[in-house]
Length: 250
Image 1 (cartoon, helix red, strand yellow):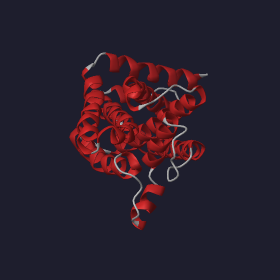
Image 2: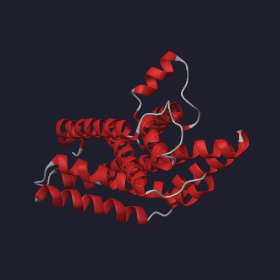
Image 3: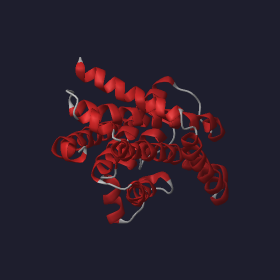
Image 4: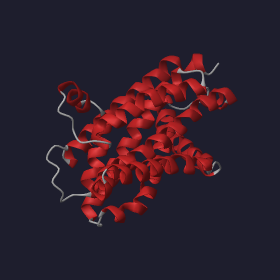
């Protein structure tokens, strides 16, 4: 019961903080839509706009996850984590609450981009939409957990943003979000272990369930792989907090 209460409290705090800073909405959603408008219309017209749309959604969520996990550094500097870490609550619950908060916000921002889905030929299908929603949440959870792990080990907010952008942007670009699967063996190998590959694939499958997507992982495969990444990075983040939490919060 204490575990769930801790998770809920931190999850709710993330949502409240988000609504108090509306600029985060414009930063994450606006940047992604700008990329979509420029690249989608500038490279190959309507066909490419439809192809790039799933990547646009994932990009918006990626920026949201970065902003959410940067708050960990702010909380540490403001002293909030000091009070949380000395409380008689599970540190795994602290990690879960923070990650769930960031993942929820990122998923919601991904759904905001869906307002434009009709312009690329999307039509609502219940089961496909459930798969799409699951893909949005899982890739958001994975990226937020990755950000949590990094933010816990980085002292500087500018340094955190620099590292996250250096790591996540190439991962996003090499996921099939911008261009189709490459014939390069090393790039295909990287895509096979890249969580963004399965996030973009899951969103693409959910948006266009009847399209010919032979080289794209199936929705079931994408969800299972994303779930594996989610568990891995949650355990990794919890392990780091358990090992370094006392030192970081003092």
